[in-house]
Image 1 (cartoon, rainbow over the protein chains, first blue to last red):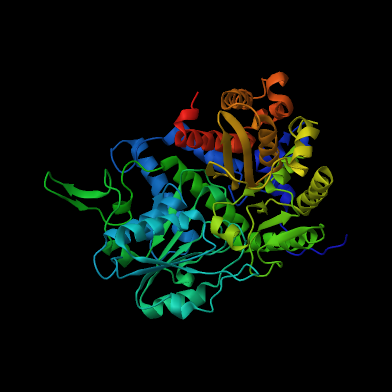
Image 2: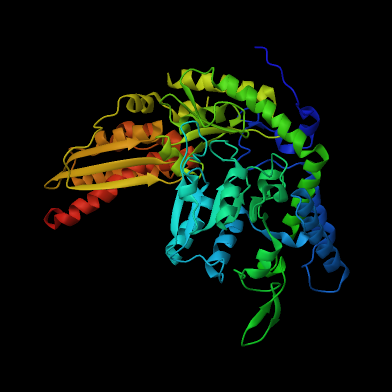
Length: 419
Length: 150
């Protein structure tokens, strides 16, 4: 097997930073972690940042005049600066911390449900999403649709696993108030054509929401270049801890739109009659925020930025190209999604003959290979392609060609086991 | 290898050649899904007086859920509803045993092969899918015909 790799990172060095990747599982087999689209592993630098925060600086933020409170506030707000720089936000005040991407997307849907004109979503409005969305970018819009009477419309998919844009002008119309879509599909791996959708949405005056959960960890994310109105992503898929997500939103929108959750920190003044609200981002961060988690996300961003998102993207592209090539050699294997590495991310879903993904995943696990099986919270995609579920292997900056080889060997073993 | 404790030959045999598969006439029909993995079953129960005359089903899912439906068909068809419910309860107990139970072969017959599955929390629901569907469908069938109830 000869395959030329270009752009691989020094994974020997990188893997030393990830304690869990040294683990042996199931009777001393090396862990082959290929479930990165579900969550990434965490480098020592992030774990140490979490520890250092709790051991030396822990306090509540934005209140109190003591030294720990000031340090904790500086660290929390410092993380916001890091996120703002990471996504090239024009202003740090456009970065809202949430608990995950789902909360970010729910926040947008709720803001629009409570908004005044011109943003208000009501019975005369239309919302456009796509058939390849994660449930977190479907259900909040279904809820908004049910509560307001707005019509929910969907981009379909081509047989190759791309968005079908052929009817874009009929889908996105003068009635469309919001278009929400994923930048990279968590199931298909497809990277979507942002520009074409944004151009049409802007032409009709619709807001654009981008779910960047599967993009932020893997590629340069520039919210200004995307020209979206809102961008959501989560920390735990990009080397950060769980419990921290991000919603970036354009400043004038954040000023105009109403808050969703009420509580401490999000107010300006409170009387028994009514309250006025703090400016964004605090208007949208009610209650004690995930402080340590934000600090951990900041450390993750430092780690990713030190390597460079363009280099990480190149590494994953090389691994994905090799993985697609080798997977297609496995008899009866069908890739669900693009069968090339062009315009695709590093999550690859497939079926293996009639063998159910649960059984594939179980036999792979016995060999130390961790993959995800099921519908990946994107059940409409499975229905579209007439399959109950898939097996998904997903790679990251620490993934190696050797791990691709281990997966292929494992799949041959699965076929023999159920053959 | 640990895997062999889950994928017993009996289970793989039932998976490859499921017993009683296909939908036939029934008194009640239910559709159950396992939302975490997408396994689905449509199951019908046909009662003849106090006896389980037939259990028919269409299903999709992993080897464990498919084999379990096949074993269910073997075990409950021809028994009285009361006897079948006792088998169902014994199977449920085995699957909740976290790898500690062995199962009474007198009661569970081929279903004791699922003892190893109980060690894998993610797969217990697969094994129980058809049994929970049967329990639900049987309750509905009984409700339609209260005279049969004991």
